[in-house]
Length: 234
Length: 234
Image 1 (tube, rainbow over the protein chains, first blue to last red):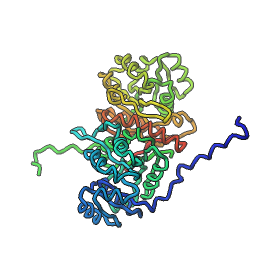
Image 2 (tube, helix red, strand yellow; image 1 turned 135 degrees about the horizontal axis):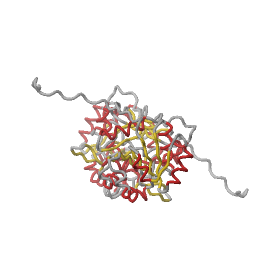
Image 3 (spheres, one colour; image 1 turned 90 degrees about the vertical axis):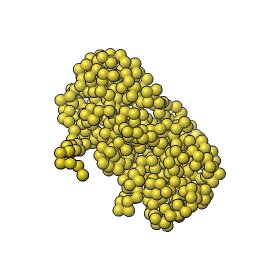
Image 4 (cartoon, rainbow over the protein chains, first blue to last red; image 1 turned 90 degrees about the horizontal axis):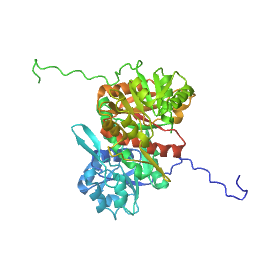
């Protein structure tokens, strides 16, 4: 029994009550790669302002022009500075060095790491284990002044890029330490038709989400599919 | 151009053409735990012959009696010997020792590891990394004479146990080195209404599938759900 004077517990927040993110500018570092281009295209098509970043401004601008939908291109540092939310879609090989060089430009930004550290050999894809635990935890270690989350790991670049595909039927697992940050990323995912952003844990549980892509590659081979993930009962 | 004498490539096998497993006896080691009981119940309800195993025959028989559906109970070694397929649903803490002690009883058997090595602290669940890479790889190392696969990681024990739940809406990711073995496990999963067994890679990619349960626990907390996984476009 609680005493009548005890403060009442605050009502639980509806986990689907997500913020309006339509005014945010989204940067995509590594925006000239398949994953980055695809995400940039989908977000822009959903009405988001998008800037893709690359090491060379010209390449970014060229890729942006090809994507249309109002996407802009800029050198990585400028892309980071002009954006509210910055998606990291660079290859795993350059991940640490790229982020380290952009630490100041990414300060204060909401960073969304979507990098999957994978190795490949004759038997297919397999998970690499970053020293920090995951690509996302590496980002968090290298970017102490940014708000680091992880999401968008399981999307098929083929489906993202295909203009004939109207809906991408998948859930986006969003990981992070701060609820408000995760909810912004969830809301962004939810702007893309068919997609839903679902909170799926803290960054220390990012490794398995990143490396599940190795399994999806096996699924795609066996079933000739572009497999995505849905969470049931949610 | 191939020469007319060249042998034609065999037609690709339909990945959904799975074997008839209705005559197989399924043992469930750790069958008195929540996950094991739930799986035993669902498989038996689907018409499979099921024996649950425990360290003490009496406890297994008691649990079997409570489950009904013709489930039998036996001491672990007898359960293994009398079964064609043996599901490992023991707690991670006793996993290695249990399997080592049953090596001879499990020789020649199709072993299905469904153990999730997790740790828990104030912040929730997190993945443990077994020395061998995963629980399934530990099983494969300890059971050189068995055919080791991994599956049934993401099932809600609550849903499995609830007799009012008619269908379990989820895909079961099945991992293993030998296609025929995986297909038997896929077919077993497919006997449970709502479930589908999907091949999802080799054992070296089991860790992320096992530890994804930590993320599902986060999902369940946030959304008050019993989350499962579906693969889209498959």
